[in-house]
Amino acid sequence: MFSYKKAKNVLALTAALTVLCSQSVFAATLELDLDETIQRALLTNPNVKIAEYNRKAAKADYSAAKSARGISISINHQSGRGGYADNRVFTDAAGRVLYGKNIGNNHSNGISASLPIFTGGELQGQIGQAKANYRSMLSAEEQAYIEMKETATNGYFTMLDAGNMKTLCQESVDRLQAHLDNVIAQYNVGIVARADVLRSEVELANAKQDLISAENGYDVAEATLNNIIGTPLSTTLVLKDTLQYVPYDNDMAYCLAYSEEHRPELKQAEYGVDAAEAALVVARSGHMPKISANAGNNWASDNWPGDDNEEWSVGITASMNIFDSGVTWSKIHAAQENLAKAKETQRQVKDAVELEVRTDYLGMREAEKRISTTQVAVAQAEEDYHIAVVRYQAGVGTNIDVMDAQVALTEAKTNYVKALYDYNTSKAALNTSMGVGVPVPEPRTFAEPVEDTAVTADAEAAAENETATAETNEAASEQPAAEANAETAQEQAAE
Image (cartoon, rainbow, N blue to C red):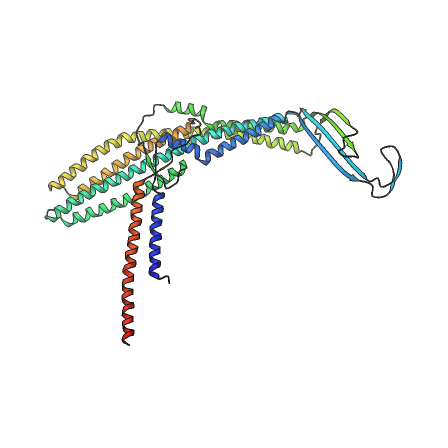
């Protein structure tokens, strides 16, 4: 019988195996620099692939529109059987007058060719639309690469920033722990009051809370970057770079001029106007004549395959819409309004691009100024903290002075790290708003995440400990049961 105690043992073993398997999954490690991060994102992210497929589809549509100007050839075959519903007098193929239903077979074959000579601008307009759409999709693909570069860069910098924040929080905990040890030592010899110990313990607890939040933020940033570059979310990433200050030499005038020439959205807006103008040409072609050249050859017979009685024809067909109850005029008016809308959209996009460039440039310069000021603040805060600790140890300072200096030091370092992060992300945003191009990456194979054997070994040891504990618990639980069974047997024998 499967007892409850054995069930607990099985559950413990299952939990141990689960821990082992999950730790093995989390043991993969991958080293990355910024360039490889961008390359991985460009080659694996779905947004880039979708833009590529849109460009290929637009190119095929453009080719189809141009091919419509050429000759088109078609063949057909028809086989049937029929006759009159009632008897009647009819003349057969030989000229004989007969009476009956004239039931028989009919087989025909034909080949025809046509070539448009003049379409009133319809084909030219359709080609113009397809060309503008194709060029727009080229710019959209370029924009997808630029935006994905910014996304990967921001993800990389965010993880670096999260790592810096985790380090700062750990430093704060270490400082407060060292100070608490010093306060306790002085309290034990009666130099300081119990209030200093309590205040130091509270500050340490608060710092530990901040550290927990920073560690969680780091884990989230790591998972987000894994998602951007297409690696398993459980992969442990080791970043090779650090957040640094690299001066940006270009002024705003240069950035604005560069964006006017290279920003993909501006090109897309221009192509939108071209497509609207081509659509207007197509609409106006409804009032123009259509001329085409035609040629054909036909065969027909009562016998399969119907290749007798050959006939041929060559000619020109001309047609023109005289009256359609205002349909063509309505299409022309709609095309004119769409053209006006496309021009307004182009103006709107131009203004938005200029505003974006200005905003990103000013944000970068603001973060640049904060870097220099926060550097000075960090140096001063470190000196102030050192003085406060020395004064407290000498008995001439208070615990509040140390706590205030600790808070000021942590805040100064945090401000410096945030200034670095803001500067680097603002520079990445500026490059995107300017339309700085990204070379199309060549297909390549990246290194796979490497399994961390140390982590796996720890997981296996933990699993073995779980198993040993389960076996010990089972043995301990079976011994009282055996003793109880023995006592029951003795009582039954005595009776």
